[in-house]
Image (cartoon, rainbow, N blue to C red; front, side, top):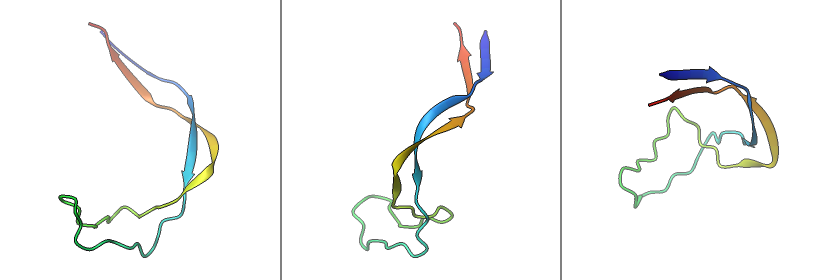
Length: 65
């Protein structure tokens, strides 16, 4: 039997800062596969120091065996 439900959950969240329009990338990276290409995702290097509570509505799925 499978049970699926949605419920409102309140979680503490730190908001992210503004994206950097001109991010700095390192040359000769030591990590395998690190090309420095982040497109289409922006580089965000800062988060807020203040915690906010936000409501979200996840979908949960549980199987009973």
